[in-house]
Length: 116
Figure 1 (cartoon, rainbow, N blue to C red):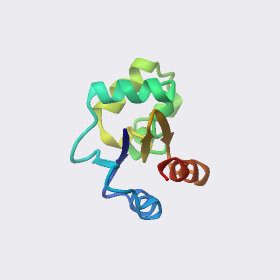
Figure 2 (cartoon, helix red, strand yellow):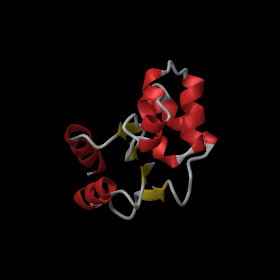
Figure 3 (spheres, rainbow, N blue to C red):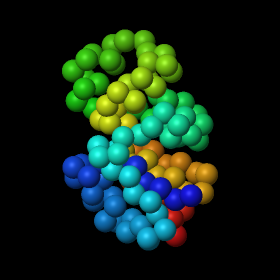
């Protein structure tokens, strides 16, 4: 399976999608329009190793709630990810059982190679 979870209103996600230029076999899911389900989130956690690895700690809501100053459990991270799309580190790219999370140059480059 090849799938990209992204946010259509995010300039960084749009830039990365343009750069990756995914083929028609790659399913795109705008997480604002089609939020991640609990089943999808569990699959992402299994691939990423934890819910925390999927959390966008730079998200405005994360900062506003002072979550960086709290000790959060994996269950807390799961609840946040299901609560609001902004908590998901973006984009999340799945390629045949591999996961690439975030927008670092190295991550995007590795995802691009896997998609080819």
